[in-house]
Image (cartoon, rainbow, N blue to C red):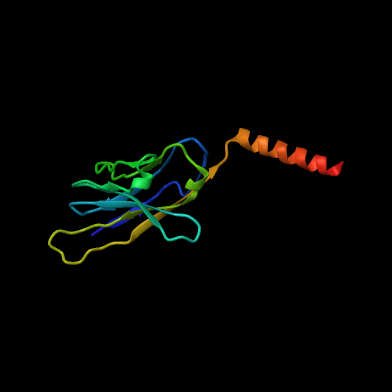
Length: 143
């Protein structure tokens, strides 16, 4: 049986307040696909965001419901994760995982993961304001 997951973007840089979509394509010969997204920031353990299934309903954790969404397209074999209104705290490593299950087989294969690293940057105007404030602060220290 052939199972794999591909996140084509790798490292992604986006601007605070905007939306971003992290791609995840998969290959599975299973009759049902179970796909999961996780977020890992810093040294913390990965946190479950949502699941999407080919047959049946998936689930989105309450803290992610408002801004995180995904739709499983079994024809394109794709389950992209979209994050709306990006915040600096969204900067993290995102994992797309496939758990294939085979009907009539007692063995469950799991743990096929791939990674996207998302870096959210402040908007340019905010950088300019912070730089101006810092420059003004450093100039006043000289006098």
